[in-house]
Image 1 (cartoon, helix red, strand yellow):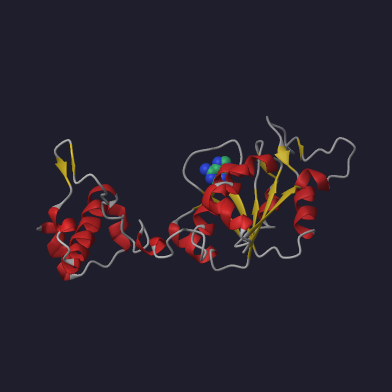
Image 2 (cartoon, rainbow, N blue to C red):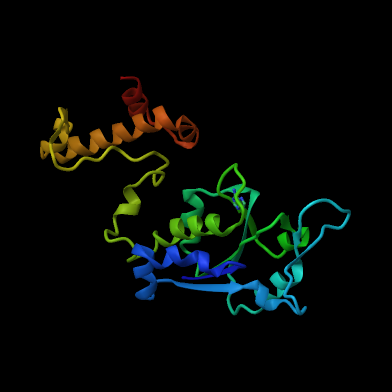
Length: 233
Ligand code: ADE
């Protein structure tokens, strides 16, 4: 997968070159192309923004440098703008995007985008109901969530299938040594060696955690009779 990012701050993306994603880049499992759209300005001062028509405070990103930067790309794939008014990013979107050959993110900064920039994108996506200074951190979050699903990025290929949201539920609790920490013991079933019982316990705990902490997720989850019984037990 090749990901293009249009940004005024390419240096902000160094975190993606470390850890698992960084190793993935080195191993050519995915590619990151950072494009500074200031390079596509034509005026001597390389302005990318201007004051809003109709007046008012702040500056607005101009459409032309972004359009030219997009046109310079060989394969854009799906074009995504990050902005608070977009639809909220979730695991399902990360899963869908992880099957794309190419993705292009447009990161805004300053007060906002000229409205016509939105027409250059396929989707406007937010990472939550709060306002950040720019689209770089949202873009990095979305890239991380997407790229980690690509084959060979995580050490253990099976793990994305087991984690939170993968089946519409939160993840079950995990434990490792010691078996007893200050009197808090690992649930006995996990040391029993009975894998059927362990699977049942994990599923029940995933249901329970979702019911307790994110009951909204259960609205889109078809509870079987057996699962309903587990929850009310
Ligand atoms: N840019 C500024 N705030 C944002 C948010 N919450 N999500 C996506 N992009 C943003």
